[in-house]
Image (cartoon, rainbow, N blue to C red; front, side):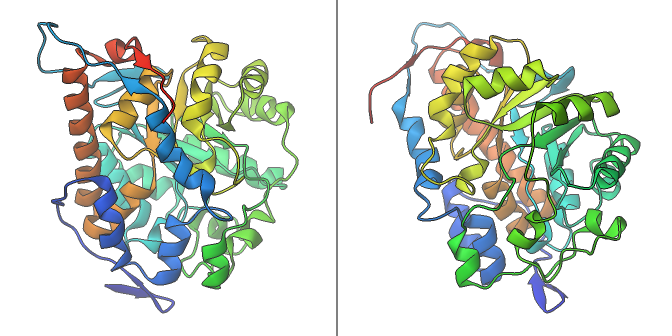
Length: 369
């Protein structure tokens, strides 16, 4: 263990042996300090939306196919002009130093080893440059929590371009913090500095709760902000937090090069729909104009399959990868990605889909669960 400001951080570096991603949560709870674990795991209010995110995958079913005369399905895919070994993606997740002393650097190493896309957060424990360098040339996106201070926004975008970042994810669904009761019960304040805040001399975030961090973020965000960011950088801008067809089309009209369907993993508006339940209508409205990233509640290969079949191009997840980080560092993250990808391959074989393009055309049935 490493101790930073009195907070114990895992130093583990090992491959993981586990049955499914859900098993990792209890194992990680045993080694991540209570406040940090509550921040990572928790959702807002009574966490109905958090739970529904996973339950909603039962609202659609994969139609098994026989006599397909195929074997060895391949998970390679392309999106945003980039090639990946898998359609899985690391969702941008803040403060990964809560789980491991190497934080986002080890996550980047593990994601790169799995051949997936890494996304890092404005509120990362390690800097944009250090996280990008840890990926050793593998593609990464940067998630921007837009600040009221446009000098700070420009600073972050400049740092992202210098680090070789391939896309900007603009988070739209967090102008304020959701009512996260675990954090309140635990009186949680970030013990680990946030490197990107430190670099700009805005304070490093340590000793603050997430609501205080968000207070410096922009509460008023509109289409012109997408236009402004797209004009400032020649990188694709992906609009994150889209939960309706109308907002998807508005974002594309403002210059978004991608749509990210997500309810922030059930951490923001509790009582809203599961991300999977709104994905098909958004995909129909987007109609292949831009790629679609999807996250929230993904725990199984079948969830990944269903999201792709419902219109997603990349499928992201966060919490299980962070648990893998705590339990095994970079190798733990790699283990989580490879396990989920292996589950996906089994589902692809049983559904008679040879490629990810085939999965996107697979038939889903829709019986109420």
